Image (cartoon, rainbow, N blue to C red; front, side, top):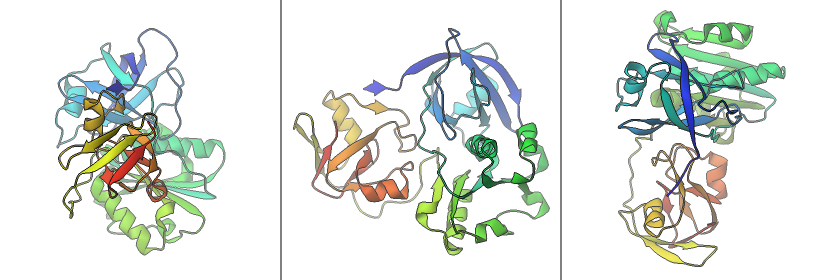
Length: 317
C-alpha cells in the first residue's frame, strides 16, 4: 500500500480557541521548511490507537502549520486524544498537505461556515481579501463564547458576518440576502452535515446551480444505498491485467491484494488520497470529495468507496 508522505512535526503551541476548540501549532521536527499549501488544503494526522484523521490547515505563517480541532461529542478517540493527551513539545506524524477543496474563481464568492467548519474558509477569506476580491464570509455559531480566530476575523471587517442562533439568527430562522443572489457567484460551505445539507437545499431553492456549490466533508455521508452492490471488473491500463471486484470488496482492497501500490488515507471517501483516473467505463461515485463537475466527467474515481455501473472499469494505473 502506498501511503501519503509522512512528515515528523513537533507541537510548538497548544491553546484554546473558542469554547470546545483547541488550536495546535506544528513545526518541522528537523527545522526543514514544511511543504507549501493553498487555501482549502488539509493534512492527515496520525492519532495513536485511532489511525488517521483529516484536519484543515488554517495557518497564516509559512514556517508552521496550524489546525483547530473541536472536541467532538461523537468522537471515536481522535479529537479526544488531541484535546486531552497531546501536549506542547510532543511529536506527531502528519501527511503533506492535500487539496481537493480549492478556492474557485468567480466574480463574487460567498463563504458559509458553521462552527469549526470555519477553518478552511478563513484561509480562503484572507486570500480573497489580499487580492481585494468581492466576497462575504457568513459564520454561524450557537453562542458568542464559541467564536474562534477573533483577531483574524476582525481584520476582515465588514466582509465577515457572524450569526448566533442564541440571538435567533440561525440559517433556519433567517435566509441571508446573499443567498438569494446566485448570479455570477460561487457558494463555498463547510460545517456539520446537517448545516451543509440544509444550506445546499436552500441554495437550490434560491436558484443556485450545482456547479456553483463547493463543499468539503470529513465525515462520510449517511445516505442509504438503495441498490445492492454487484460484482464488476477492473483493468490496469499499463499492464492490461484484469481483476474481479466482488460485491463485498472495494476496488482498493482488490488492488492491495494484487500488490498494486495505491495511496490510501481515510478509506471512507472523504480525503481524496486515492483518486485515480478512469480511461473507460462508468464509475458509480460514492465519495464525498469529488465535485459535481468531476463526477459528471467520469474520468476519475475514489478507489476506497466507489464502484462501477459498467461491467468493466479501466484505471489509469
